[in-house]
Image (tube, rainbow, N blue to C red; front, side, top):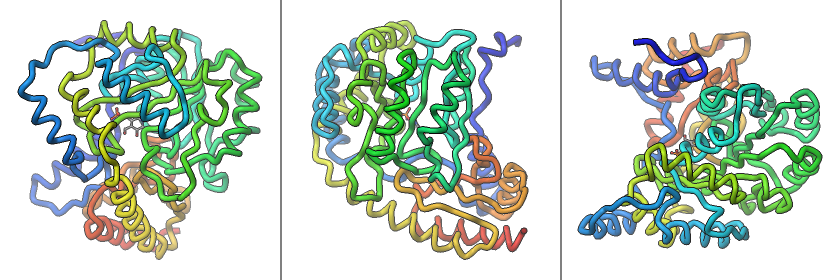
Length: 388
Ligand SMILES: Cc1ncc(COP(=O)(O)O)c(C=O)c1O
């Protein structure tokens, strides 16, 4: 088969690749602890499952490309209630997961020669999405000393050097860093962004509800409302509601951008599953006590894993403020891909940090039960030994 131009050729997900290696070894009878996947190990909330059962008796017709009106209403209500942000009906797009909404947004706006500013560490899918839409990612590396956050100075310098930048990607809590931004830090970024009116801002808030601090969630759209005419706030049910396979995500932003996203959606897969949309209405309208209960569990796991990882002289690791990943740095000049492959041999599957623009690091997911997680971290620590 001949593939399309390199612009339209994506690289397979390094996360799925490592997960597949782990599964293959397990199929051969080996004991492998899989810490690769960014997928909650909880079930969808019980009221969501009940609503889905009830909906199964109804006809599942096509729905509008931008989702059922009642779903858009539920999204608008949640965003108003949780973030104090008011979006009109024509400012909400719905897709097959946050991923598709982001892809559609890039597809609708990017052209060859355009650039997208991407703070690193970043979610591994962004660079491929950007390239698939004909543009180039401009990676802005951040350091552990900065808490893996983009600073206003760094942003200003990058914008000076990137006249073709069309988007800035902000993702907090970050995958894989777990870092969040304070209101003050977002205000500083907003101040710089005001000087670049051609730049759009993607605020990927998919992990907003999985946080371990008592601070209210700070997102750019709420901190700098004057930037809302060019900010796309993206969220979905995958992480907070443990509904990854249901494939529902949304974007709230300026009406012309949302209309362009909806047009692409309608010519692609038409809409996300009507049944999943009905389940999402139940998720958004239902009680959410489970969020704090699950966050307490994630937090315990994070602390248990950190306690093990920090016994190692070889690793340096920050405590993430949200999401469910740890990003230890392997001290010395190690090729993280080699290290990840070596770790597989001793029965622990991780993802090399270079997949996220963080070479020399490993990503471990703590969306797995605590006993298994701790055992995986112990294997990792003893396998790395005291490598310089
Ligand atoms: C940062 C980030 N954004 C978006 C997504 C996609 O989420 P969804 O399942 O809603 O497509 C993920 C999933 O891993 C993610 O980590």
